Image (cartoon, rainbow over all chains, first blue to last red; front, side, top):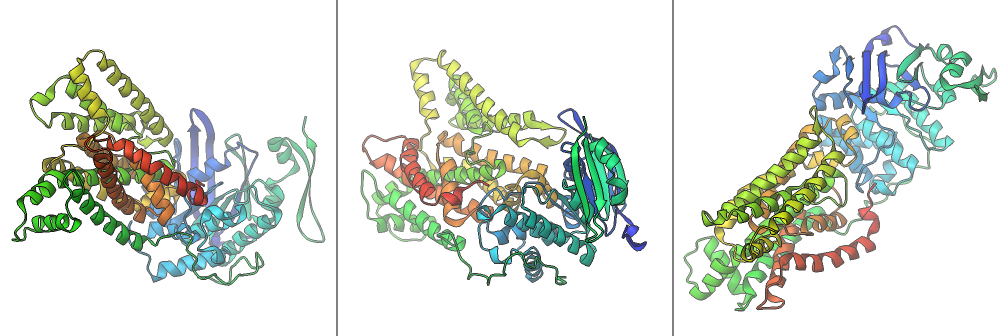
Length: 269
Length: 363
């Protein structure tokens, strides 16, 4: 499973979490523990509640029932800025609204560490520069965000999340609408951040083969419930894929590359 | 902190281009230019009129009087500049400042290019308050009855829109917008209803108020309205960083540590104070709050820390100059200032829009 004993400390614990949106239940009684240093993948069909769970786990949305605690403290007890120093989120379609230069967008990641009108100091500038470089967008820093391609934008918002210097990074389908190369690059970057900086990552992901390849642990959701959580091999089984996704799949590990291959045979009638 | 983690191979790392500014003006330069423009506008507007004065003489009266220097002035000039023209000019400046700052804040808060200061019903509520006061002939008791009723109406309207859009501590922006539109229609209908029950003389007073006017403004108008405008504008500018983060959506702002609900409440309150106070003494003047922030965004970029104060300064000059045109273009007939704001502002705005379209792009 790749988790050392020291890393199995719980960072985020959701217990009995339920959430309704305009009267419709989107999360039902979810229990989930995120361990320090792990890369946890959330999988499930569209509408299963992955995005809602990300919102609740990050404190963006408050659960109707149940609690989420971060390092032992209920999330709602953290002040907004305090939460922003610990937990960063990259939402599914992040945007800046206006044509801010890329540098300014990434600098927004420093907000939780500062008072409202406090100017950036040397340390802030260093953190921003490193975040820009890490995400590979340093050369774009003076460009207006509105003029970038989808993949470039995605990396800018990843840089903004890194500029928050979080303990925990939550990503909601960070590669939606991106081509294969960007997908691989983004996942490899997230994996490296996770391994080299011990950054705890929770990632909603729709590509099952990518999920199996990059995540330490998977949590599978269906209709607002958590139906399985554990090692990728234990969660992504043909039975569960059939049951949750309604798809007949062959899942096998390629002996040569060690990569998992998933063939979708057909729809379960 | 950076331990060699990078997107290697993503793209050949290009040498960073020398800081390329896509925008025509640096913010600090813009503040200086706009400040000079404001001084020039005030001078021109106090010098030009039925009685023409040299610019220097007008400026001298203003400087001598305001700094209480013991310099001998021509009494006729002093009276025209200091007693007749300057109060009106400064009221125009104050109202332009309030509307443009409020408009910039509302466009940021609602992430909507069509947002303007009155969008949550403030101006319609103010109009209704004023019309009811005129209908009840309250102005017989005090000259301040109509402005007070307008201010109360403006605050009441934005409170009502806020209350309608708020459920268990959360204000939904889309609902707030729709509630504002609905209230604006409702108050408009109530005003139209009152038309049926008033005599011609009262009707003329009502229409005159609704059209927005700057004629006959005195120093005490300025004194009464400016504290509210100042509190509102300073309050909005203090929230500029939060408005920057909010323009990317409320969820992301919350994730970055912004206390979103609190910021929304304060922005609404400050806009209501500034806009309510402004329109309570002049009536609603259109286009300033909508167009000036767009123009400034095109010139200096979208950062609210610069956008709010520069919009305020530009709005002040803009309205002063529009009012000057309204006064002198067809002298002795005075035009409504609102006609001039539209005729002057819209073509300039369209020019900027089409020549620098990408800068207004709403992502």
